[in-house]
Length: 173
Image (cartoon, rainbow, N blue to C red; front, side):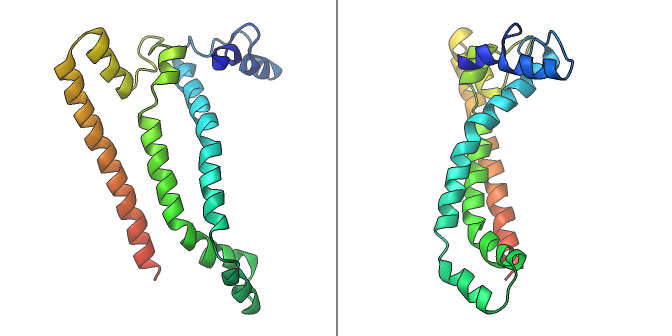
């Protein structure tokens, strides 16, 4: 609900920010062109801290001996980043990418609370489509079929991400 206040056209934080640049009277959630970018801002705001914590945990799990050995060998900071940090963080990047894609696809609650799929159908995502067909229109079979398709879409994207990152790791060795 705090996001409703932040996007409020009269006194919201984002509206005030846009007024600094001379853009007045913006109804972020009521405009077809700005509703989905507004939801994107919310999703990024919500997910970034979690993903950063996961990446930080991955960084902390890299043994400092690798960096010390690279310094002794004369490796610069960029070389240490490129040849030690990034390869060892590859599984963490994979995990973060898969989780972020899954979270992006299943975003439902903010869109349901803030816009209910509107204006028009500008923020009607697949999870909202499934919910509306299953519980509002009582088309349970239709919603179930859409859920299975949703599962296969997420599974395909996740497998593609695993394959791309695995191919990248075998090429670099």
